[in-house]
Length: 312
Length: 248
Ligand SMILES: Cc1cc2nc3c(=O)[nH]c(=O)nc-3n(C[C@H](O)[C@H](O)[C@H](O)COP(=O)(O)OP(=O)(O)OC[C@H]3O[C@@H](n4cnc5c(N)ncnc54)[C@H](O)[C@@H]3O)c2cc1C
Image (cartoon, rainbow over all chains, first blue to last red; front, side, top):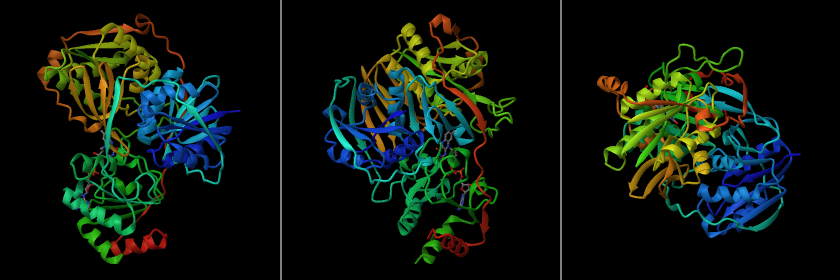
C-alpha cells in the first residue's frame, strides 16, 4: 500500500488551498495520507490541515529557521521525515516547484512534475509543451515517487476530517548560505487568482496602467479575481503575480473573461481548465476565439463600460 | 569568477506542436529549433555581469547530440567565451542533467551557475533545484533580478504571492524568469567570430556520469479539445448569455 506524505503550503496563518488539492490527488493514488506542516508557530495551520478529509495524521515541525519557506531548509527537514513514505507530494505552485525538486534530488530520483491524472500508484498523466501534448509517465515502482500536483486539475478535498497532530522537533540546522529578506505583495482585497471562481483578465490592448483600472473595476463589480497576459505585465500595466499562462499561473475558474488578449499558446495553456471562457477582441481572427465559449468581436473600451451599465 | 550557463535545444516557441499519430512523441521533423527562451535570458544576465566587471568568463554548457552545437554557437555568438557539449543521444531527464552539471562544476569551479527556470518542451522546472541540492549550495529559483555584491548576491524571485527577496552566498545556482532582462540580438559578425571560439566535446564517460533513474515517458496524446463556442453580436447579448449559464 502507498504511504503518502504531502508537504503543506501555507503563509504562517492559513493553509493554501493547493494542499487540499494535493489531498485529492493522493486519494486517487490511494493509501495512507499524512501531511507535514513546517514553519514557526504553525499550530493553527496544523489544526486546519487536520480537518481535511481522509488524512491519517498531521506532522507539525516548528522551528525558527523554518518560518520562511526556504527550499534548502525545508528540503532537508522533509528528507528527515521521508523514510517510511512511498510518495512525497507538493503542489505545482511556485512554493512546490521550488521545494520538491530539491527533495527529489536528495532522494536520488527524478521528479514527476504537474500530475494532472493518476493511472496507478506509479503511472501518471502530465502536460508537456505548454499543455499541447499530454504524456504518461511511469517512475520505477521500487523507488520513491516525488511529485508536484497540477492544482488546476484537482478539486479541493473537503474538511470533515479529524486527524491527530504529531509535533516533531526539527532535526536539521539552518543553512547559513541562504537568507530570507522579505516578500512584497501587491494583492489587495480581491479574490486570490488561483482560487477565484471568476477571473477578469486584461492584455496588451489595455495600453496603460491607468486603463487597466477598467479591468479592476469590472472585476470588483462581479466579485472576480484579476489576471493578465505576459505582455500586460511586461509593459508594467499590472503586477507580475497576475500573469496567467505557461510561465504564470495555471487557473481553473468557472468564468474567465479575456479582454484584449490575442490567445498565444503560452497564455491559453493557463486557462484550458476554465469552465467558460469569454473573449472580447476587436480582431475576429485572434486565436483566443478558437478556445472561447463566448466570443465578442468588439472594442473593449466600448464593451467594458457597457457591461458595467448593464450590470447596474 | 566564472559563470556557467545551461543551454537546451528545444522546439521554437512559435511552432504549433503536433503529436505524432503513433504517440511516440511530437513532430520535430523539419521543425525550427531554438535555444530555450529562458536559457537565452540566463546567458544575457551572465554576459551583463561580466560586462559589469564582476565575472571573467562565461561558459555555455549543453547536454545533447551534435545538433545542440548549433545552440551552443548561438550562445557563443551572443558573447559567451567558450562552450562545452556533453555528448549523449539519450534525452536526459533533470536529475541526469544536474549530475552532468555537477561534474562540469568540479572541473571549472564557477562562482555562479545560471539556468532557465524551465525548458519549454518538457516544462519540468527541476534542474536548477536538483543541481543546488547535489552541490549543497544555495538555490534562487524564478529570479527576476539579481545583484552581485562580492561574495554574495541579492535575488528577487517571482512567486505566486508577489516578489520575494533572498540573499545567497556564492557559489550558487540561480534559475531565471522571463522578466530578468531582454536578450540581445545576435549580429552577423558575431556569428562569424563565434565559429572560432572553443567548443569542447565531452562524453558522459569522461565525466563519469551514468544515466539512471529515468522515468518512462510514453503515450503522447493531443490535449482534449474544448467544444466550439459561439459568437455574440453585442454586449447585451453577452450579458444575456452569461445570465443564461448562471455565471452572472
Ligand atoms: C517562453 C515564453 C513563455 C511565455 N509565457 C507566457 C505566459 O505565461 N502568459 C502569457 O500571457 N504570455 C506568455 N508568453 C507571451 C505570449 O507568447 C504572448 O506574447 C502574450 O501572451 C501576448 O499578450 P497579449 O495577448 O496581451 O498581447 P498581443 O498578442 O499583442 O494581443 C493583443 C490583442 O488585443 C487586441 N486588441 C487591441 N486593441 C483592442 C481593443 N481596443 N479592444 C479589443 N481588443 C483589442 C488585438 O487584436 C490583439 O489580439 C510567453 C512567451 C514565451 C516565449
